[in-house]
Image 1 (cartoon, helix red, strand yellow):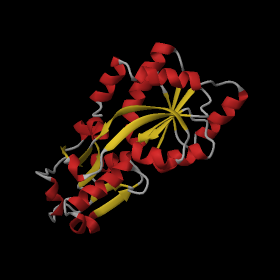
Image 2 (image 1 turned 135 degrees about the vertical axis):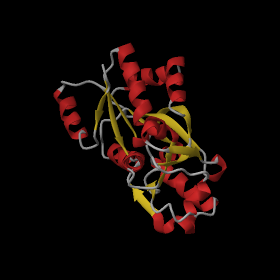
Image 3 (image 1 turned 45 degrees about the vertical axis):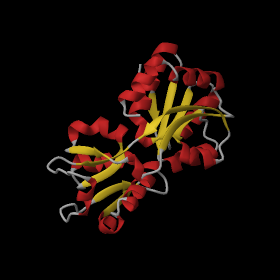
Image 4 (image 1 turned 90 degrees about the horizontal axis):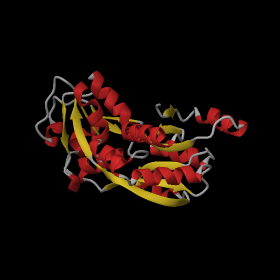
Length: 242
């Protein structure tokens, strides 16, 4: 049985079903860059407990906006830099792992180091929106601290979220992209390769799961947090680069 994934727009239908009493599910909202690990975690949890899990993904700006707007969310997964200042009331927090920024390129290209971004052959560099995503922020910090900002300014293609960077890399529409290791591990067979960015060139990315204080399914949400602390969940998280 697979965990059900909803678009942000699909939350309206979920709300109607909840009020109709036909659906009782644990709802988790997350940054789009964590679709693969969260999907696997939800599937394992659902198989073990029988508790239905619905997943909602978007950039963190969208996710936080939906929650503030009253979407029936129980747990939210994202980075501490977005969640702590968000104003959301959280009843509990589980530290899931550490996010890692990588530079990736499509098939047919090869970058020996991040400094290769300044070369004329690199004409388009995809970056998640720094205003709405932590990896966009981290990517911008890296470019500034590595002295590459001026060299790549006219090459930047700013997109809404991490998965869009992956899509452009797979299609070969960009020459390079900055995104998280978790997403790159899921597409590595479809791209040319990737390099880890020195973590000293961007602020630490702490990925955490927060239980909302007004969660509709509090008991089920606490069971999911307990599941995350177990060995099976830790193995899944590690396998996805967190």
